[in-house]
Amino acid sequence: MEIEPTETDALYRTLTSAIIPRPIGWISTCSDEGVPNLAPYSFFNGVNSNNPPVLMFSGKQSTDGSHKDTVTNVLETGEFVYNLVTEDLLEAMDKTSDELPPDEDEFTHVGLEPTPSTTVDAPRVGEAKMNVECRLYETVPVGDHVVVFGQVTYVHVDDSVVTDGKVDVRKIDAVGRLTGTYYTKMSPVRVAKDQS
Image 1 (cartoon, rainbow, N blue to C red):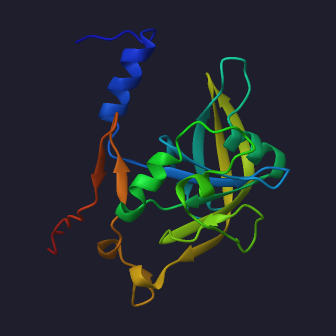
Image 2 (cartoon, helix red, strand yellow):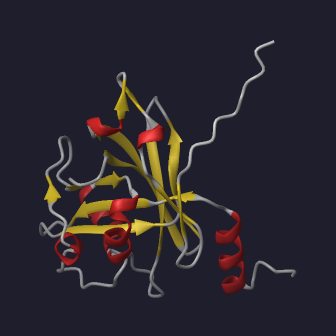
């Protein structure tokens, strides 16, 4: 199979099948009118860990050039929260991708309780084992997407995934994005280092 970059449908499926697994950017925001919003993003990652710590997610623009609710809310309020997706939250996360009008809130739609954050007004998913509060750092348009960068302002970690004061990846049943309707569970594999 050979694909030209202009073949957008085939290219999207191929790239999202090759760039795997991807962390899921489950992003919560709040509109200027106070309506909570919660949506998953397939293109999400950390940019750096300090000076300042920054996360990013990429949201597609509508054909008329407008943004989806999440990006609109971030541009209006300058805030968002990243919520870690674990296996117990997979179905709820998937359901938050349903198309809802801007005045309807995905937390209610999927039966989750929006929990107050510490440094931002955007709510967080209280059931998530980790939440990262962010303030807008910068946005960069890339093709038909806008990449949103957020500076980390506070992190919540559930004690159930902490060992000796550190996050223990062996205790986090995180879920990664594959392609289509496929996801993957995390199974940590340790690489033996040569001690010589």
